[in-house]
Length: 364
Image (cartoon, rainbow, N blue to C red; front, side, top):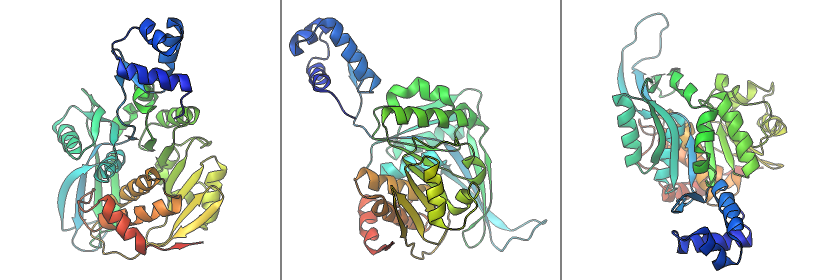
């Protein structure tokens, strides 16, 4: 975020004298009291000052906007047979795309805050406490007195592949454009904003517009075929769009990763990343398209792998890597995650990603 010389000098003076009057600040930097008021308002609009005595924003990090849910996992012990009961096991863990990405980023050492909604129930309380314990700022998570924390139930094949997923996330309709308007001062100072399509369409449209106008990098995960359609037709303002091949094909009738990526870029997304299961990952950065190989990995549970991939890529972007190099970190993050039953692998570290990325190959 750029500042004029006068804005920079005034901000420095306010930090040195947070209880100074506007007249005193004006005298210190050589402008009138009225001009100080105008410049303070500009700094507030940029999210650099949050209140009086001047309250300063924390170190800019990532704001993740999306679901905080209870994940229920049902694992079949033999291949599915339709229309009959199946033997299996069950477990539960904290989940939600937005929350998963936020916790992964915290594990990677990135300052991150989560904006989400939960119900006034024990499940929501426990999930948020555990998320905060993992290093995520949860001050923007709203507890709705009459809401029920969302749930996602995954039925897994013995191979670890998803057989069926059912999302009960009616509470996510409360994560709408009013939430963005009311918390914009906390969002605008972010180095990058991440959102996912479990959010209400009004939030997504509003966020894309606001981030574009404020020149804030915005990453969006399409999540699923039905939810991809919550995004507006015009994606101008989306800096990084993440989706899988099936999701991309739901809006473009083509089988080629590059053609799919270029179509989504034509709709306005600046950069596009398309995964294809165990196949290569397509990265379109500006006009350059590359393929990233995905090595074979022992799979225990694929749940959470996509979220880990996104977090790994965002981590690379924040380290100022090229998109295809950042995608290599995402591949390693996903590989670590499919090897455990949790949504957030305890082995996920910045050092592990950096080391693992050395063996990932780029084509094109």
